[in-house]
Length: 399
Image (cartoon, rainbow, N blue to C red; front, side, top):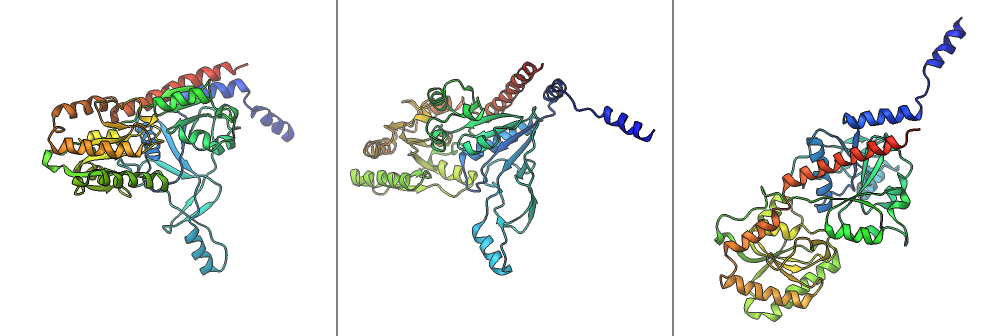
């Protein structure tokens, strides 16, 4: 009798078949009972790309989706060395991922390290890492520069989507001839027309959705008085040492071409949080833009929002918004032309030819396509489209 009971119990707990698993996933998708994971590199320095990822995660969370940001913890070499020397045994200490430089509140965003053990962080606290466990109704969003993550997750059951914010890093991290399709990925969110165009030519057949980011007008704003503008040129040269050298070369060449303007000052904007960056940017009359590999390039748009005139490179990434009316655009990478146009633009400004309302109207016309409200609606709409597509795809798997 006891044996019979056991056998009966065993029979009742039968494994769900494929159709039942699919039906369950579809009903989770319909009821928003799924999870969206954003894979994020754990950088604590200001980074436009990470800002966009975190903002998208927050916008989806604020809209009622279940969102989690996941990262692979990075070891703090120095802290590990010091702790190991002190304890006379190997002790690993990890960086705490805490991107507090963003200009929005991320305190309610779930940010979790991936792994299977508890780790000690360099602020003295510890955190439990969790393995990535996903269901067929979940989504995993991976930035374009991480093909290793795409390879590692090739066998997972969820839908993987690449978030492409740069054309430059897409092929750099891959073997010649490799495509995202080889890792089982065909869905991409693209942050600019240039990236979409590039992807279509190097990996034909992807399913690309266009994403437009917004400029935060609460912090990027035109100063109240024109007299608040200083005869200064702001610049950032954050693309590495070569970019820095080229930018400094433009500045030195400008001084050599225009000795009468040697009193004009240049200010490098680096290592600041967003508010301070916006404040400095809006106090300068000009912004020198030298990012030759931008995937989109928000800096000139931020400058426009501050009533600051941009002089700089017409990079491939910004082609969708750069025109003759909204900046002094030079050939991408051309140092001499940029130095020359810088002088012409500054002279125009000093003569009072630049302070017309019409100039700012042009800037506002450009900025109207890139609002924070639009960005929020955009990412929610994209996720809802993915939800519907995933439901259809799962239906087609039923036997």
